[in-house]
Image (tube, rainbow, N blue to C red; front, side, top):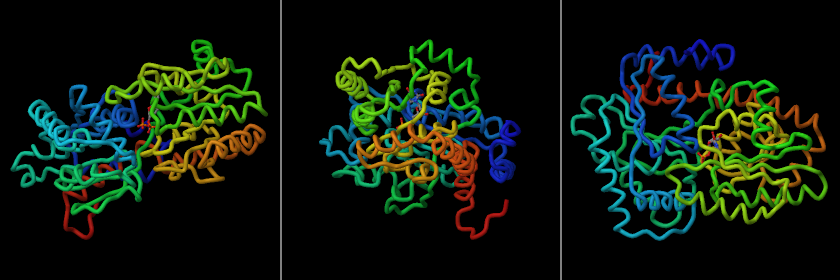
Length: 409
Ligand code: UDP
């Protein structure tokens, strides 16, 4: 499997993966999250799990299950961790714990490394078997969301679980927290060989444009995101409306539902209402496995936005950059790690800023092409799946060798 990436991913990453795999050969690795479809975490796991198995690391992916009130609560915690004021009761926190307790009875968590993604399954640490530490089992909590400025008591409550892990992993240095455990920074990644990112022929792109009814006769602005207020779809429409006064163009907002996001429908309805009956605004609700369609949409677009007001990382930015597209992103969370302002894209702080940069791109095709090219190389060096696998295995291996100053591979 790793051979397929040679010539695409940096050589050093492939070499390190190979060395780490020699050390971890035959060991088991389990990932746990809260949805198999929708959002960046599922996107990465779909590609990472088979890759790790192909490398000889026995890897499984478990998904916790809960009732509606569990998902409503975890969405609230997600919003509060990203800075929104939310009301919580003790009863809600207790239910959250109980759902995790139920899941702990069903899930197979006995593995050499356990990687728990995000807050939904965080309390599973309480059900770790007593002998697991002695057996060298490593439990890691991986946070994908923007926890730089949580509101109220949500973080202190969550911390009661996080502090019991062996290590915590964040996407961006400023998300790191004061914790009594080891902390690591690992940025997410995209898979260049997935249907979402592989090269497409012009025929394949045209087929999708016809199927989705998006004419290619005028410039296309695109944002691909779950319908979530933090992704600011209304701000994107406002930026488009400013641009439209000067440059003829169309806007595509493509989203898909995530099973662990109960607010999506409400936001989608608001967006539809706000867009009104402008025939040049295309709002697409695609099933979550429409990877080739998203790929084609990204490839047929002239400018790609991720105008988030809070963002863990924003895989859609790297996806667009990999396709050599000019990108505009909100200056939040992991977006500025990907967009080096003025070099691989533009970061913006307002609707007006977004509109200004869209026009700059549309009016300067050569500048857009050059930034797109630099963007692709930046993603190649920093944000491909192989680099993230290298990092996860490194964290695991260094936790296994805790206390050593030098770890030889
Ligand atoms: N995505 C998709 N279809 C959609 C909307 C999003 O396939 O209609 C994918 C998108 O291409 C990206 C992931 O879902 O790979 C979203 O990840 P990101 O980090 O941008 O945001 P998150 O949803 O995790 O906050």
